[in-house]
View 1: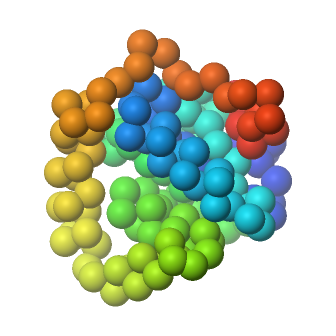
View 2: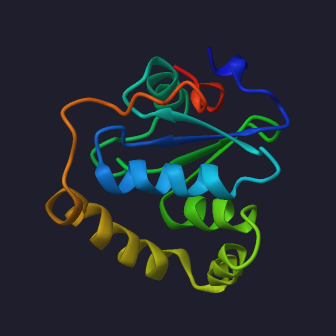
Length: 140
């Protein structure tokens, strides 16, 4: 299943019931001019496969994961967000400069937002279903 991700793409795994996460996915899709990313909810079969393969504790990391099949590498939290931003063009790519901030500081901010995301932005009953136009960007 994880082999379905083409080597020239990267897979963004996100919390499919989180309104903030779904909005972020739509933001990335709109700015992904080089068609670099594919998407799947953490709750999907491929999401569960990646979580299992990399032995991710979903109690500690439950929001965004970035899988790079070319390097067989998984990044998460603020590092994943900044690596995604790097590929989105100006002005979003400027955010990638924050990679110089130590991860423990970046992740403290990230964790605070992640911990409160349902309270601040709400959550859906089920994962987002992509429109027919966006379906090719999603793996089930």
